[in-house]
Every structure is written in structure tokens, then in C-alpha cells.
Length: 295
Image (tube, rainbow, N blue to C red; front, side, top):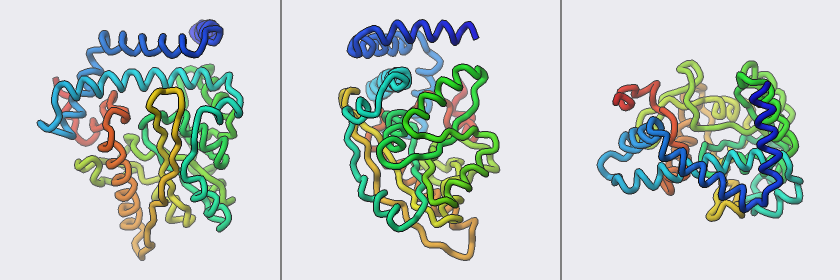
């Protein structure tokens, strides 16, 4: 509890400062973290070498690593600023592309599954879709500190997002989709074997979550990928991409694998288009390839 109240004091001080000062402060913290955090710098290098081999230079690895710290800290800053942001303020700093895709699906009465990755500005992407496209239900992992958890959940809820705890999430998700609503799911997270299937991801056989595919098949839901980009961390472009389509067969298992592979293909292309924007700072392949993290 003490840590949470100290955080609130820091938050109050930050929000007194002009936005440009806050932004520069968090960029400075990202630079400091890059210098001090040898462990995660190594993890980024291990991940990148595993995926790109000798085709990636040490200079490119450093560039991607530095940007990962910067992007992570600025995502955190948005989470803090969002707590004090109105709908009008959020709308003024972004453009949403592809809105007509979801509007057509809603007219058809189809439920929607938005899929995204830890790529670009994922926090602002989720908030923007829920606030200005359609209210979404999203799963979150419970935290050890209930005060910080409530802070995060309340911050997201201000923009019409329904937050579902990870434990026991299936039943609420089913209810939303039966009612022709929308859910938002991450497509690139590491999962337990029972919750995933091995597909080709970034040209590596990787265990990926099957929840989006299983729900899409069960409810004939439209899978709409979402990405959020920025060039200056001031103005943001939210893109609703083309629907990931599939044809139902007699084999549920094969259908789920095929849909998951299609999601993996989309995510892989997104990452390869600009690897700086994906979150490389964790041991993503430790379940499949633990040896790559041996020092």
C-alpha cells in the first residue's frame, strides 16, 4: 500500500508538469534503463539473433533495443496520462483508419474479435478502439498489488473498456460474443501448452494462443487485427486492418490451427515491417527454445 501511495504522489507531481517535460523525463529514464539494465539488453539481442541470425547487425540490434526501452516507458506514460484524459483530448491526438470495416460488421450483426500484439503503442490502441469504434471486453492478468491493479483497470474503464480477469475469463468472453459484442485479445503472448498450438511465427515453430481462433470459429466472429503507430509519440494512427477470413471444415482442430497460423502470419509481417516496434524485452521463446537464453 505504501508503494502505491508513493506512486500517487509521483503521479500528482508529474501531472503538474507540462506534457513535453513529462515526455522528456520518461525518455531520459528509458536511456538510463538502457545503460543500467544489462540483463534485458542481452535478452533483446538473444531474441533478435534467434529470429534474424547473421542478417542483423550489432548496430541494428542496438537501435531496436534503445527504441524498446523508449517505447515501453512512453506506453507507461500514456497509462498515467490516460487517467486524467477526457474523450475529447484522446480523440484530438489520433486518427482511426478502417472504421467502416467494423461498422459493416455491426450492421451484419456479427461479433468482432480484435487481435493485437505488443507492438507500437498498444495501450493507446486498445483505449482508442474501445472509446471510438465499439466498446470492447479485454482480458488482463491480475497483479500482486491490488491497488495498482485497480488503478490500471479504472484507467481503461474510463474509455468504455470492460476488463475481465484472466482467471475464469472464458465464460464472460462467451457471453459478450453471444450478444454480438466485441472482445480484444493479444495474439503474441506466451501461453501454456494446453492453451496453444505450434505454428510458424517469425519463421520459427512457436506456441501461440488459440483463444481468438477458437472463439471466431464457434461464433462466426470477424477477426480484425489492430495496430497503433506514431512517428513522434504525439499523434497516433490506429489502423483496423482487413478481416482475417477462414473457411470452416469438419475438423475443429485443423480449423483452429489454420486460423491461428493466419493470425501469426499477420503478426509476423507487422513485426518484420518495423522490428523496433515489437516488445523484444522478454524471453518470448523460453518455452520452445530455452537454450537461446543460455549465457
